[in-house]
Image (cartoon, rainbow, N blue to C red; front, side, top):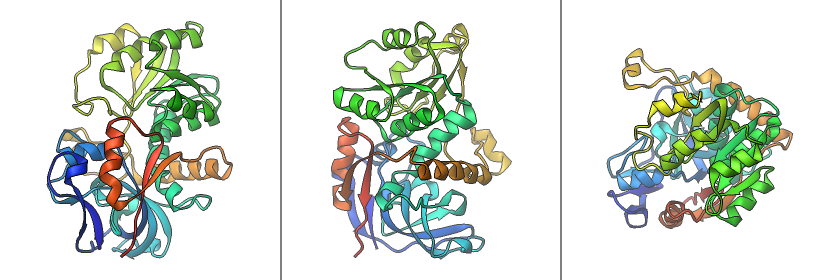
Length: 343
């Protein structure tokens, strides 16, 4: 089968290649998916470069975290998925941009019938992590003020829509007029961080109150400024770290959290039981049942037309390297989806 592989660490344009590889076989509790579409993620850039990422690999390896397709094989304990059109997050967040991919059953869900394969591939990760953050962790309430950093990104656009559907007052930050327009078309008030001071914009919009919830997929140097924009007893959600070269491992002074009477609520999109020993490494995932509950709620919102993934671009497998370069240089909005051509 064909797969997009990192053949050595470096610039995505230089190190990605479409290669013939052996078809994977599912183990117990796993399924194999005949992939029709797969999404690109900002973390794929770090995987290509061999820099800090939540999941890394030694070349050669196939990239791709979230997919849509039909289950064609299943291991023991996962046969209920055979023949079903699904969306899924791949095993160890790798292997998705290929004709076939392996996924743990805990991260496999029925594809929304209202979405085609490209939209469905763009749906799972952004909306699952946004729902977990906003509803499971921050308990966002109607009428609260929500700040979304990286508002024009795939995850940012999902958070905006979930905030609007909840009845929150959503303020979305993006870079440049075109990206601000994307946020505003989804129902947010847009802030162009290249032309306005974040603190001034937030304080003016909220009449001095600050934001009750801050949803941050950017991280980096702007983190501490976000804390100054928050209401007393506000909740800060560190969801992503696209502007942090240490992928969120950069130390931040907790004194500033205390000074603002702010809560920090961590969230990671991962479902499944882990041995207790993994807690030594800080890993403490949500059980699979939580994923089912989240997906059920999201399917209802899709059916009600309250949410829909924003797909900025569709590319072929041979174009993945250039597409990731555009991601790295902030020339994208919404999700970039790879249409998987079958040989």
